[in-house]
Length: 260
Figure 1 (tube, helix red, strand yellow):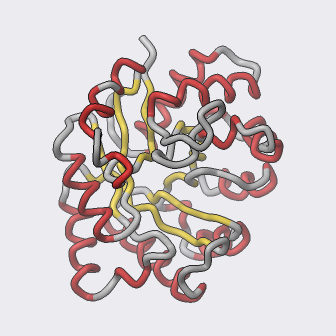
Figure 2 (figure 1 turned 90 degrees about the vertical axis):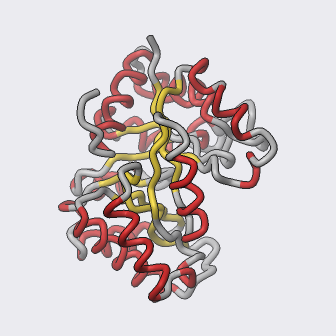
């Protein structure tokens, strides 16, 4: 039986407000048996936590993404720390990191927000979900400075080179591969996927964003992950069943979910 773990979703997003339960009820028919809904700010994290409690097969990550760093104040930081540590469905801190493409927050604030949430993850023993866009060097430098190798986690929506992948691999991180790998202009990412060991790859959609070809531009959902798995298998010249099996195991190890 094909088993897929979508390691990065946003089913709490308003894009699913009209048919959320219907979409989620169909996932198992596509072999998608587990998902992790990822927070992207305080309100989003609260919504992800609430949604994860509704479904046995759904987990969540709680965190503040660059662009929402102003969400953090004394009250919201206290909530984040307590919920991340004590809520059983929270399996990671994220998504957190740096975004120099949009630059919605000052870079110094982004860096502090990233470092503080890494410290939280270390304290409570949970992995991190890293968002990094147009910021490879600073992301790597900050992670090394914070000894992220002792925390562990995943580089979400990996988009950098095989050379940068080496630095993240040395820290023991996983790589989230999604719909972008199917795009015609994704040559650099294909080279990185070829380089990264399958033992360090997990599947993700980032839905409702970044739907794979031929659905590019549509609302993404976990049922499209077959197209991602097939492209990874093609790049690595291995059977797609091997991709399903290994990424299923990897996702459980990433989120410390015990027996597979």
